[in-house]
Length: 170
Picture 1 (cartoon, helix red, strand yellow):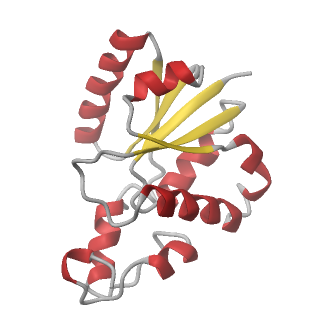
Picture 2 (tube, rainbow, N blue to C red):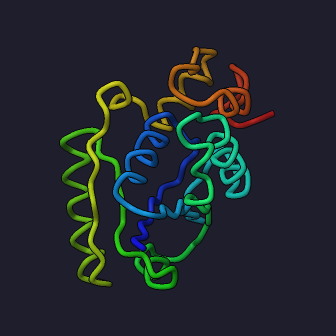
């Protein structure tokens, strides 16, 4: 069985993330969704809230609902290479939207391979999702913009209403 890790902050999960997950399942038997928890990074949602949103988003997706047994969700503060070793992953999966993202992902892939020997598989973003980022979603929502085409309904409903300072929830 081949196992990949798909990691990120997922703050919040977007349709782009779900597309990468769906496509990774065509290559790997299991895709471990790993929520990175960086205590130095301020997030809108807690690790548990992000895990719950991911789980709900998978349930909302017609393509992924029946695949949830192949998509366990974890959160960690450890280095990704440590998690990969502990979970016996065969590869790391990353989505790439832009050329500049490719450069930073290439650097991370080389570092991860040097640290653990694990390979990284880069999946190029589907053009219909290439412009969507969690940061953009949070900013658009904070101004009352419509993010319904960017995130699952459960995420759109969980985002703070317009006018909340710095995107913080009320």
